[in-house]
Length: 332
Image (tube, rainbow, N blue to C red; front, side, top):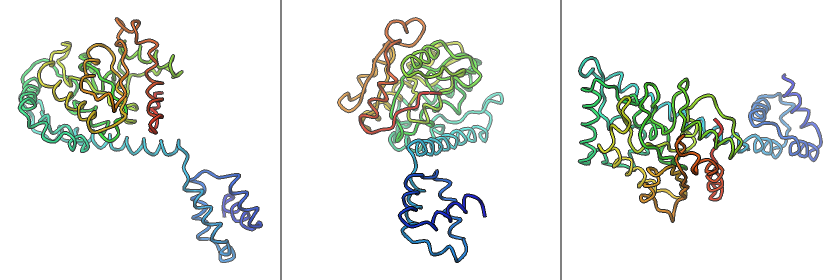
């Protein structure tokens, strides 16, 4: 018999009042208590005289999780959902037939796989503008000699990573980074191992001043997205080294539909609108139901004109807690 089992059995040999006092004053971690409960159920007959109320008290203590434990479980469940969606997109591309000179292409509408968004955006890809957009993106990927970013399986990464039901915060960008290896389908974010862009460096600086966060060595914001921060660019694709090359092709209408759906169907979402381009989206948001925080863009050209000192991260958490929602852990 293990030392933990002996301790528990010895405990129940004590007078009832003393047993309950010990249980309430020195609760064991949930996992350890559950193991002890399992051990008790298979113990010898001499140990079967433990009172029912004592066992019930022990089991009740074992099922009480701390807020930190609950958050960790919720995050891991959400992360598993993200990995599933990413795997689905990757498999669709790997299984499709090559287009043109060995290039594989999957229809755009098949790359949005998160069910919660498909439910709230029914028929969006069947609208005339969306059909034109799909044909345009297909021709750019198939026929252009210039690479299109992000990779196909990451075009809808923002929506596939942050399900509709989990959206608590929205950060709006303009279009994807256009350098090789930078774009990953999340606004302001770059994959691990890629140099952190200047705008994101400034975001980290403000986070440090606002909340005391340690500045990370990478630029991957996926942990924010998994927690419910929708990192949405207004335009979801771009040609290499050609900023805004896919602007005014239909993406803005699609992402406007996303923003309007969030505004109409949800309550208490915090929208962070950095720069004039993002602030123009305020017209799509019902300000009687949601929170809007505005500042200058975090780019090197404008961060000193109102982004630094905006304290949007602490304000966001205050707003979420005010309405009973869990805050974002901004530390990466």
